[in-house]
Length: 173
Image (cartoon, rainbow, N blue to C red; front, side, top):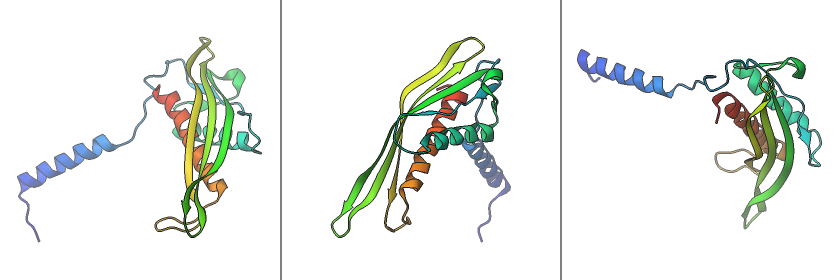
């Protein structure tokens, strides 16, 4: 058992509290114009041949905004802002090989064009014509990771897109 003096313990607790306080994840809507309280997210357009990809991406973006709760998701006619998106690319390709089994690791890449528009002042807040997110997955068990499918990789890439759209919209970068 190690004894710590009260002054050392107090200093340690203070440092731990300061460190933990700076690690907490918070978002602020301070960079958003104060008149923007609601957002509409119409179904993304799908310029790929991937079936239901537009619904998957749209639902993920809506879910992120609902969970974040900085902007309330409403219909387009009553929204202060709107996010429009278009899925421009989808690719599932081999990323890693082994001598014994051949293709073992794959990468799903999804490209999206998205715009966040202030409908009250009729101006774009941000516009990203080529937001590309990827996710790697193994088709066979490897140390530390179980086998996954293309749908698992697709979901992970979609989640990254939704996170990025939320981040750019709420944090303003």
